[in-house]
Amino acid sequence: DQQVKQNSPSLSVQEGRISILNCDYTNSMFDYFLWYKKYPAEGPTFLISISSIKDKNEDGRFTVFLNKSAKHLSLHIVPSQPGDSAVYFCAAISTSGNEKLTFGTGTRLTIIP
Amino acid sequence: GAVVSQHPSRVICKSGTSVKIECRSLDFQATTMFWYRQFPKQSLMLMATSNEGSKATYEQGVEKDKFLINHASLTLSTLTVTSAHPEDSSFYICSANPLGHEQFFGPGTRLTVL
Image (tube, rainbow over all chains, first blue to last red; front, side):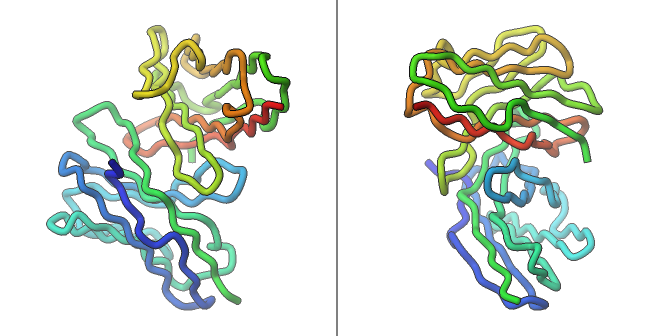
């Protein structure tokens, strides 16, 4: 039972354009969401997070949008840079629980120069 | 961000041997650490939650006698893969959260069992 899903296994975007990565969840107890970037053979790097009391959080080139009614979140990267090429995972937590992260399946983003 | 280290980064061992992986929080104390494994082209799967001073909590399907976890101090958790077999070959990653809900991950350990 995949509670956090990233339906696009891969995405290619031209350098300088906007990259939009999507994530859906099914567990209504999730109330905190995170995005991680991962290179092969390395641990994930935290990018940005959002609480369910917000619908948007922005940090530099990264913006996360949350639509609670649709149980959907997205990560926008603009402008996209070649160094953004990596696998991106969304993750969710129920903060009233035990802080365990539930990860999505990941989206491989390739930025085309 | 917070720094989490892992050692070793890579280990190759013979089938039947035990392997110990260390996870350290370098600039903060962590009463809880998490251990994950990742198979090629798959997501990260939580194996267990390591609790300082008490027993680890294992996820369903993870053998606690196979994957021994010890959280002896506020900055160190160890994962020992006992009697390793080729199917245990994987990428093992630990994490901890210094403050709030954001978990910070170690660089991972690639285990190859021959």
